[in-house]
Amino acid sequence: MAAKQKLAIDGGKKVYNGTFPAWPSFEESTVQAAADVLRSGKVNYWTGKIGMQFEKEWAKWLGVKNAISVANGTCALHTALAGMNIGPGDEVICTSYSFIASSFCALQAGALPVFADVTTDHTIDPKAIEPLITERTKAIVVVHLYGIVADMDPIMEIARKHNLKVVEDCAQCFGGVYKGKKAGTIGDVGCFSFCQSKHFTTGGEGGMVVTNNDDLAWEFRSFRDHGYDVQAKLNLLEMEGKQLYIHKRVGFNFRMTEMQSQIGLCELKRFDKWNLKNRIFNGKYLIKALKNHPLVKYAPVDTKERQNAFWWAPFVLDTTKFKAGITTKDFIAAVAAEGVPVYSVLWPEMYKERAYIERNGFGVAKYPFHDPKARNIDYSQFNCKQANWMTDRTISFFTHPVYTEEHMKAYVDAFKKVADAYMK
Image (cartoon, rainbow, N blue to C red):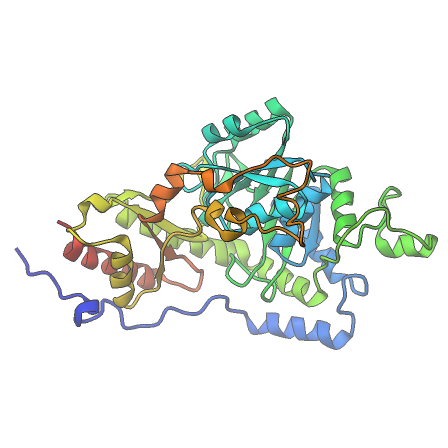
């Protein structure tokens, strides 16, 4: 039997001594295009035409009737719920396993989130949803985490049965496909984030709300723009030209700038043929190389019916195979020491955040946790067992489009080297 290699974390040689390129990365033409917008002086959504063009192109790419640009993905989720008039006394079923914005959006709308468990594929468990439904439930927020498309058919069936709205959080899922439909087009509303770390960014922040419902789209436009009256189906400038007092509801300024939209247009042009293409290659490479490894219990879901968009590639480990005293945290640290960037699990149990445990809402009244219309929910009593189980067993690899087959091979070699040393 060949001697095991000394791990880099113990002073051995690294598997990889090269560089993993930084992401995001912009073409010079994109930088120039954004600079041209700055020089034009037309930098606001209502002074230029680029924001509306980006919305049109995004809707066309996704295959929906309406796209409404917003300042970031958090604003997109807030706009989706508030635009559907979800508010005090209402409840929204959310996955326990996502970034905090996926549940804070309910609080921001004045409702309360109720947390559902996940399956081993990292997405919400349809079987966990129905037991949580009450007369207060108004919507379900489904998160396509890591680029993995959730199993939408049973979720939509439950939603139709109980007359609930479905919001798809696609912050990490640009181009994922479920049974021929792109993620974000299956539920009532789709929400996207163009933050720094996402599939692509519009300059650090940005977001989009999409829907095939024209009436909802106008409500979203209103909420994004200080609550102007959309009954006449006019944009803000048209309204201001006809009336002095135009605001029918409380809204926010969630508009995206023209520079952000210009960057978005440039990134969208190269998305399918370069960005998504490379991500899919990288993700599939990792799955093929590692799915049958004895330390891997679950590889990322990527099937004909649920086509992965590969924001990241999370693998769930069979920790019973570790030697005594070895943890997933130890394993991740050792893999990283081999010269490859890796990460752990992402936010598996949101209800453990202090904001929920202490019910720290808005203002002195801690709204909406203590609103008289709201149910008294003790978040310390939530226990999503599957999400908890995933916490200590997940290692995540990056699949950025600037990475090549060389980088994927380094990932695989590092994983196998450390596994060989740390397994029984």
